[in-house]
Length: 203
Image (cartoon, rainbow, N blue to C red; front, side):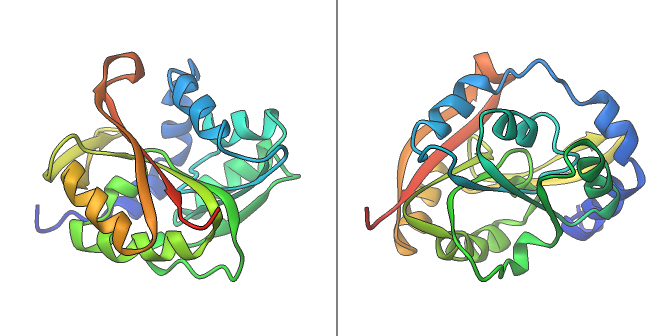
């Protein structure tokens, strides 16, 4: 997997933005987890959609529920699709490995995005996410069910995936002032996604 990694992933998503968007499920199998995430947010709270892609369906759901969404992605063609669909939202080109927005959010969601980082990059990124959360703010990420590296596919091209173990995430989150509050491995009601929720200390 030497040639694969986040930079290659960006190139794949940039090349196939329209195809990915067209093929992305709109069935909202994520709805139960989105409701759980939203249950920890204030009404009309600010949410950072980390690796937002085209905004469909995650950012679109949040916007529809009245949350103030800022979406960031490292593939510019994806952001063009998001801006066309929701021009009122705040869409920014950025790389989560270098996240430095100078502001905080009530919640951060990284659905099918954070796991494109290497294990080391994930450990380095978690403190950046903590810094961008309000005290008591909620973080939700899709990860792997165990520590390791794997590949997925986007429009027929391989992309890199990686994960820490659940215990590894709990320890890394604790180091940066967050607590793991929920984890489910390979949720059968959510397309087999493994999902974690954490909360920043201080509220």
